[in-house]
Every structure is written in structure tokens, then in C-alpha cells.
Image (tube, rainbow, N blue to C red):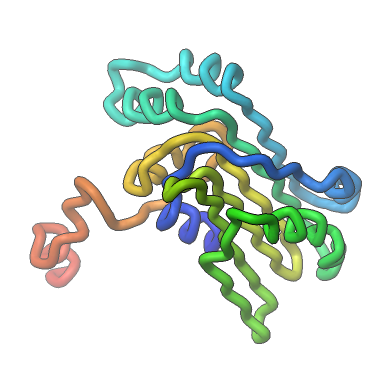
Length: 190
């Protein structure tokens, strides 16, 4: 899941997409020890954003970002034992992502630990119009689908909201990214 979210945060400009989550995924919930199922369409996102504070700068920024989203969909299953799902459980999704306009931009496979990540973008007339992330691990299956417009540098601000885990990614306004900052010196002296 961490790999998928890191990749997601690195590549996320988007605008609208038309993939459907495979129906068979719901049966995996009975086998899973943990299940995350987020299905927020535009109106629900707008409603949820009303609970964010305009006074908190981070929440105000997320509220602004949500204005351009049309949907956030996450399905994640964590299992106690290995091999509780089959690759065929996500083949329908991969088939949809082979349609015209979709491109796989990242594919990471590890034979050593079985962690695999794929990131797909859909483009139309030079604009990025969709994003999908598939992560398969021996004890976890995660699919992320975000619909709507968002700049890549803004996606990390959505972390911690609407079921999207918070991840620290170097980037805009991050003073810790600059070499020689005060925090680096403190760590060196300890």
C-alpha cells in the first residue's frame, strides 16, 4: 500500500475516467482481516468537504482541492494469510485499462517479496483524464481510482482525508527537503 500511495502522489494530475471496479472484489471482504472501501462521488465529496475547517490551512487547502474532484474510489483488502485472492480478481480491471487512451506509466514487480504496483493514466487531447493504481502483495490487494482535476503537487494534501492515507512526500513548501536546514543540523548533533 505504501508503494502505491507513493507512486500515486508522484503522478496524480487527472480529470475524469470511466473504469469500473470489478464486481468480484466484494466477495474478498469475507476473507479479509481489514477492508477499506471508499466510494465518494462528486456530490458526496462536496458534502464531506463541508466538514473541513476554513480556519485550518491544511483543511482549507484540501477543501479547495476537492472542488475539482469528481470521485475518489479505494478498495483495499488485507489478509491474515498469503494468497487469499487470485490475479484473476483484478484481470477485469487490467482489461479495462488496455482500452484506447490508457497507458501504464509505472510497473514495479518484486519476485523477492511479491509486491507489485501498476499506475495507469488516461489521456485525451493532451490532458490527463484518469488515474488508476493497482497494488498486489501476498497479503494485500489495493485499487485506487481518482476522478477529477488535481495538480500532482497537490495530491499529498489529500492524504489523511476521505480515506486516503497521509504520506510525507518531499515537495512544495517542505523545508525539510532543502539540504543544510536546521532540522538536518539537529539530527547530525544528536
